[in-house]
Image 1 (cartoon, helix red, strand yellow):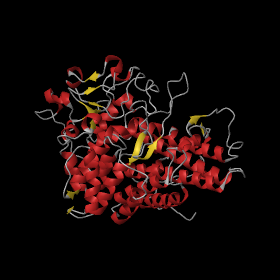
Image 2 (cartoon, rainbow, N blue to C red):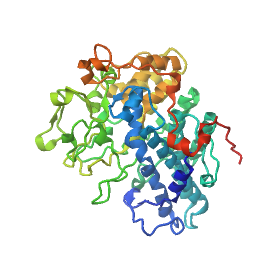
Image 3 (spheres, rainbow, N blue to C red):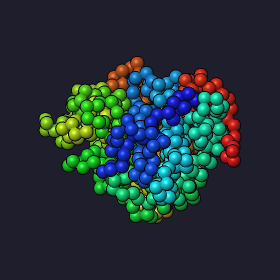
Image 4 (cartoon, one colour):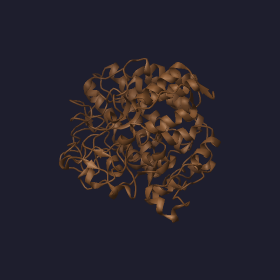
Amino acid sequence: MNKNKIFGILMLLFITTACSDSFLEIAPEDRLTTDNYYNDDTQMLTGGASLYNRPWFLFNEKFVLCLDVYAGNASGDYVDIAQFNKFAVFAANQFTTEGYQSLFSVIAYSNSLLDIVENKAGPAVTTEVKEWSRGEGLFMRSLAYFYLVRTFGAVPILEDINQYGTDVVVRKNNVEDIYTLIKRDLAEAAQLLPIKWSDANLGRATKGATHGLLAEVYLTLGEYDKAKEHADLVINSGLYSLMPEYSDNFQPKNGVTPDNNNESVFELQWVSPPQGQHWYYTNTHQAYLAAASKLTGVGDGWATFIPCLDFIRAYEEGDLRRQPTIMEKGNFYPELVTKEGGFLVENALTNNYAGYRKYVVGSPEEWPSVNFMNTDVNTHIMRYAEVLLIRAEAILGTATSTTDAIALGDINKVRARAGLPALTEITLDDILQERRMELAIESGDRWFDLARIDRAKAIEILSNTDRAYLADRNDPESGSADGGRFVVPKESDFLLPLPQVETDINPLLLDEAVPYDFNK
C-alpha cells in the first residue's frame, strides 16, 4: 500500500458538504476542522456526505468503464483502455492505478468517519445519528473492499486510522479475511442504518442498500441461501419498484432528475460544481460515452468508450433497452440537441462505431447542470432490477435450470419492462444474458459475473466474445476476415495486477498474503 499517499488523504479536510436542502449542498471549507466541527447532528451528518462522491471520483471516471471493456461490452483504442481489450493490462496502467487508489481513498474517508463518530463527536450529537454515521462508514468501506477483492484479489485490510502512519508495515491480507471483514461490517451496518432517510438526506445508504450489497456478496461466494435471504429483505420491504421505462433511470425527463428514484438501491451522489468552476467531483461519464460533441454542446463527447460488436449482437429482437443504451444508424432522439429539433444518428457516426446513449443527458439546453467534463447525474451501484435478478439466480443455485415461480417472476418482471416475452424455464445462461443487457456500463457487473462463475465456462464465453467495433468490419488488420477481434484470456487475467506505483513504494505487496488478526 502507498502509505504516504493514504497518510496524505487523511490530512485532507474531511468536511466538504452540508445538510440543508440537500446533504450534498456545498459548504464553506475555510472555517472547518475536525476539532471544531461535529458539535450537533447536522454537523455529524455533514461529515459523511463526502463519502458519496469525492473519493469515488477516479474510480468512476474511467476505471469502472474499463471493466466493461474487459468483459467485452465495450471497446476503446486509447492505449490504457486497449490493454483491457487485449487482456494485457500492465501494472503501470493509468486507470487501474486510479481505480485502486480511489477505492483506498474511500476506505480512508470511511475510517476517518468511524474515528470521528468514536472520538470527536460532541455531546449534542444524538446516539441515533452516531449510529447512522457509523453505519455509513461501515457500508462504504465494505463496498470499496468488495470492489478491491474482486478486482485485485488480496489487498491490505485497513480498518484503523492508526494503520496509516508512515512507519507502519502494510501487507496484503488473505481474500477470505477480506470477505470476513465485508460480511461483518455489512451485518453491523444493517443494524445501524435507517430504513429510509428524510428528503433532505435522500440518497444516503440505507438498510435496503446494505442488504442488497450483502445479497451480491453472498451470490459471489456461492452462498445462495444467504443471497436469497438478503434479496428477500430488499424485495419484501415494499420500498422499491421498477421504474416504468428503462430510460427513467438514466435520463432527465421533463426537468425531473432520474436520481434516487424508486428503483434506486444505491447510487454515487454527484453534484454540480460551484459557480464558475469547470473541474469538480462530478460524473464524467457523458464526456467519454457520448459519441459526438454535438450531443453535449460543451466541447466533450469523445466516444472514448464505444459498444463492441458482441454486445450489440447480444440484444434480443424487440428489446426496448437497446435504443436507451446504444446509438445506431437511424435512431432518433427528440430529447437531445433540442435546439435543432432532435438528434438523428446518421452515417457520419455509424460508419466507424455505434455510440452509447446511457448516461448521456445532453447539452445545457436539455439539462442545465451540464458542464465540460461533468454532469450531476448519479452513477448506479445497485438498482432494484439487479436485486430481482440476484434472487432469481440464488433460487437457481447450482441447478441446471429452474421453473420456480418466484425466480421466473423476478426475471420476467425485468424482461417485461424490456418488452421481451416471458420465460417458462431459466438457466444460468438466461440470467447472465439478462444481467448483461440490463446492467451494462453501470458498475462493472458483467466482468464480475464472468469472474465468479465456473472458470472454464467464463474462459469459453470470453474467448468467443467479438471485441471489434463497426469500423473493424472493413479493416483486415483488425483480426479475422470479417473484422472480429477475439482474445483468449489466461487464468491470471481474472485479477488485475496491483499498481506498480504502489508496489514500488511498498514491495511487501508483492509477497504472499497473510492472515488478518481480527482481535488486535
